Image 1 (cartoon, rainbow, N blue to C red):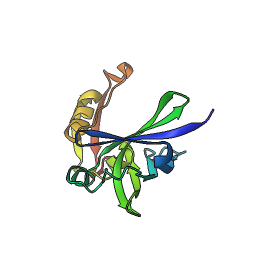
Image 2 (image 1 turned 135 degrees about the vertical axis):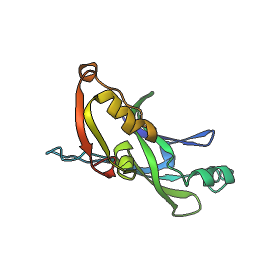
Image 3 (image 1 turned 45 degrees about the vertical axis):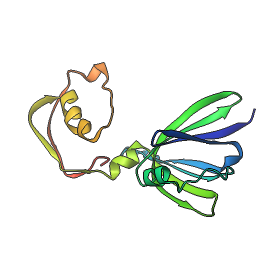
Length: 165
C-alpha cells in the first residue's frame, strides 16, 4: 500500500493542506542522543508546488503570518487513513520559483533551544510539578506529569542557558 505525506499549516484562520502532487519532497530528521546528554530534536524539510494560480503565498494575510513560528502538522496518508507523524514549527522558508516553496521546521525541543532561560534556584525542596509550572507555563509549553512523580520534591538550581539545555 502506498503512502503519501500530508502537511497542514495554520496561517491565521486558514488551514492549508499540502498533499499528493503538491508535495515535491518531504523529510524528517530525528536526532539521537545515545548518552542522553541532551534532549533529541527533530527537523522537517519539505518542498511544495502550488498549482492553483488564484492562490498566492504573498497575499497580505499569508505573508505576514509566515514570519512567525507557525505550527505545522505532518501526517502520513496510508490508504484512506491519516496517521499523525509530528508537530513542527516553521523556522525558515523561501520561494525557489513563482509557485515552488521550500520550508524548514523544527519540533518543540528545537524551539526550546532558541528560547533563553535566565536560570532558577529552589533553596527548599519543592514539588516537581510546581517547578515545571514555573519553568514551562511562561513560555506556553503544555506538559503532563506522571502520577508517580507528583509527590517528588527537588531542590537546587538550573543555570542560565536555553530551555533545551
